[in-house]
Length: 367
Image 1 (spheres, rainbow, N blue to C red):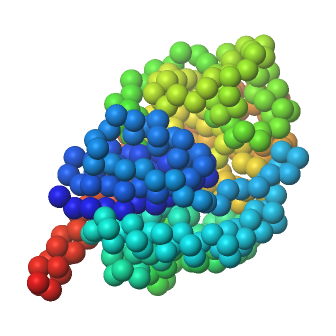
Image 2 (image 1 turned 135 degrees about the horizontal axis):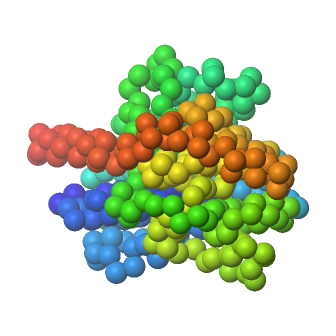
């Protein structure tokens, strides 16, 4: 049995879902120490409740996106990240060094969290990076509009600062363009999908499913609610119904069942949820925020695949939503080509087990 330390970014649903999937598969044979914050901490507390005592979850400080008047504030988010790096990162690395030494970690895995890579590096513990963000560094993005290519270059500097000197770099994405020169070592995998998603019974019960970030403007909610079909919205908390639109608290099992049963998905443009929807063959209208470059890039790749459409969250209208609903049949052929072929979990597990085997061999030789 090996001891594995895991850290992940606390912002959003994607990191937490990816790591929860990995933990579910690693739990049977390893001891796990997991570090995270914010949304991911709450998510993992629910997901890991009642799991093996070999899994320990620790809260850490983390960086979160900053919003002003309901919109992503890029400059405030950058400032918050710099303040975190100046004030909290150093003490957190020191804490993790003590923890990892006491834990006897054989391997570290990070999903876009900066402290564990530094702590593992100081102790000589091999690191596996598994995230979506490394596509900004490793992938050929020439197919994107010039403005997004520039944003990708700018954002990639932060990715490089977050994770350095990983023994293995795994990029989890629903799209797979060529790798850039110098990044041929990167392992490309699909989104890591939970057992519930893989086992879901797909059908069409005639409603629209929506997952929205908590800062979604009310105009977007109104546009979705006016689509003419029943709508189930997650991510905004429980509220009074709005016409045919009902609001639901986050419940991952119920959400997966609704995803399998919906006619289509209208949601934020996160990599993880797009991958889950593609796995189940569900057409998508994704709503990236104007200032959220990563979600804009995801949206362009989805549209290029022919499996969905996108509109800016701040500009979506009832007419735009109804137009999308009228074109669902046109997305069917492309969706059929990828349905059931998205999961990258086994690929990641092979990387982890290979690195653990190398670690055991090295320790045996040292003795």
